[in-house]
Amino acid sequence: MRLLVLGGTHFLGRHVATAALARGHDVATFTRGVSGEPPEGARALHGDRDDPDALPRALGNWAPELVVDTSCQTRRAAEHAAAALGGVAGYAFVSSLNAYRNWPPGPIGHEDDEPTWDSDDDEYGPNKAHAERVLGAALPGRFLTARAGLIIGPHDPIHRLGWWLERIARGGRVVVPDALAQPIAVVDARDLADWLVQMAEQGRDGAVNATGPTGMTTLGGLLDLCREVTDGDAEWVPVAEEELLAAGVEPWVHLPLWLPREVAGTAWDVDTSRARQLGLPVRPLRDSVTDTWEWLRTTGRTPAPLPHRPEPGLPPELETRLLAER
Image 1: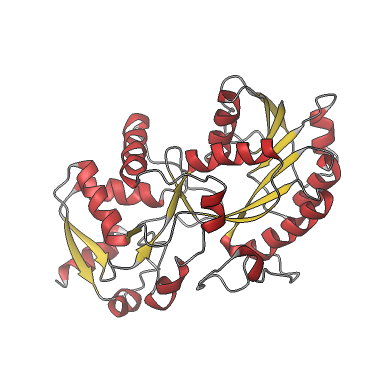
Image 2: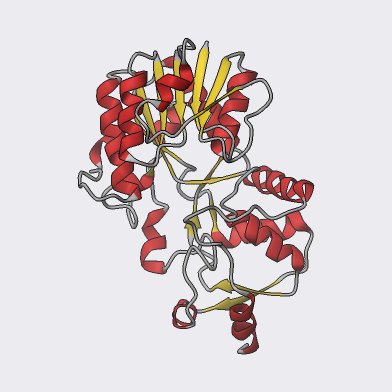
C-alpha cells in the first residue's frame, strides 16, 4: 500500500520508514528537507507542514492510503494534515504522555479515564492534545494516537541515553543522583515504529499509552547496564537531590533521565495494558542499550544539538565542582 510518513529522516520517523519498506509498502516521507534523506527506497517529499498548500502540492497525484505521523508539533500542522489526509484507511499518530493534563507527575491509568489538555496554550502537551482531537474528528474509527513516553534506540538525536553512554565510557568518578532506585520505563524506537505501521495497516482506532511497562527497570539498573555495555570502569558518586538542585543541576537536562523524587515516584506509573494487548513489543533493555552504543561508535560523533532543545549532560565545570566536594 502507499504509506506516507510525516517525518522520516531523523529518529522515530526514520525507523517507521524503514519498517514500512520492510513490510512491502510504497513509502514516501514528507519533511522540510533540512535533516537528511529518508532510507533508501522511500521517495522524499518536501514542504512546511504549517503551510496549508505544502502537503497537497508535494503529494501531487501520489495518494497515500496509510499515514504514520511522527512530526506534528503545531496546531496548524495537525489541521492541515486533517484537511489533506482525511480519506486514508489508517492513520497512526505519535502523541505524547504530555497530552495528559496531569502528567507529569501522574500516575496515568487507562487511556479512556484520563483527562487531556483542552486549553489554547501554545505548548507541547496542549498542542499534542489539540492534534489528537482535530485528526480524530477527521478520521473517525481510523485514527490511533500513540501517547509515547521515553523513546530510545539508534539514531536518537536527543542524546539522553547517548550522553550517559559516552560519559560512562570515559570512566572515572561519575556524578549520579542518589535516586538510583527510581523507576523508569522506555520503548525502543524500532519496536514502536514497526508497531505503528501495523496499527495503520489494521486501521486501529483510539488512544494507547505507548511506552514500556511499569517496573521494567530503574535508573540505577539502566546506568549499570550502560557501564556493562561500554566495558568501562566508571564509579558512581551519588549526590543528594537537595545538593544537586542547590548547585544548579537541572533534572532531565544536566543529568538526563533523572526526575525529582516528587515526580519520579508516579511519572513512570503508566497503564500500558492496551499497548500490550495490541502487541507493542518490549525489547530487552540490554539490546536497546547495546545497539545505541554501537551506533554511536559507528558514527564516531555525538549528535548535533537539536534547535530549541537544551544540550543534555552535566557541564564539566559543574561535575568537577561536585566531585571535588566528595
